[in-house]
Length: 355
Image 1 (cartoon, rainbow, N blue to C red):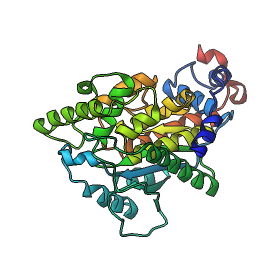
Image 2: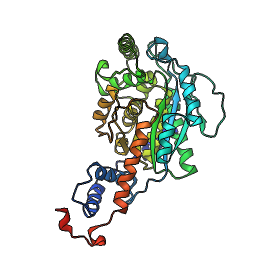
Image 3: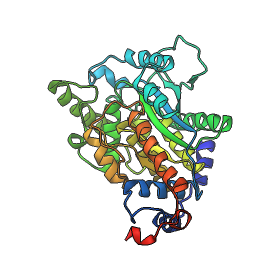
Image 4: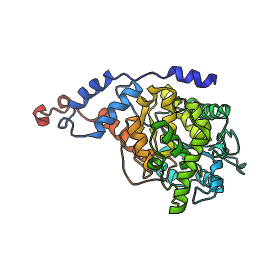
């Protein structure tokens, strides 16, 4: 708990006055005022987060955390839990969608086992083992994990971020996930924290049929009823309804905010982690950038609750951090505009051009 408390104390609100100063710079660039739309908004957000007038986002890292969920015993997914480990092997080999998209934008993928239900039969420098337990418990029968495990999962995420941060500079991070059953967990968390109905936040995850979908809704309602989580207590919600990979991503979000690094959250699972992180420290919200809006209906509710506007809408629902790395490219472009575009005076262009 000590590490978590130390990180929480370091997170402060961003300097909102920087938005005006950055806007003055943007308005003096060789373009009509406001003509670059969201790109201008994103550059202001990055300046406020980093505290740098000309931030450069060269070193990009996506953290992909994996963990299994005991609730898969209830038949809420189209895939067996063994797929979690199989996909981690795919990440390490570089064959998953997140690997392809990360190579495309020049981001490094850091994969970690926070709670896969088996021992991974591979040793690789790209894989970090921070296993809290062999999957969570079935939360229809009691808490998914103990409060101690919940705190350990968050602190494991903090440790992984700090290990990478000490190894080389990190300019921007993305959150990614892998865990069969984790949309069920995320739906439960979202319903409790936002006070939205289970029906409104629950989607089809891996593509389940109508019968499984109705069962998924019933299972989530049962889990909330059995556990009675305190919606204002982040650790209570995480321990009763969460997953180890969700807790780990909470740690990445908190550590990123403490180091003034922009945190680009991916889809529904990352959104659940963001809800927990903001419960722990409301100032965390200032450091978040929503990459896209997922096809999972609960994701839109998460973003509205957090007051975040997504950069993209590509009808995606894969996870892994795929939406986040795509948005990173646009966020970097916004900073390059701010840093590299000529001003009216330097380009000797009449400012009447912008009228």
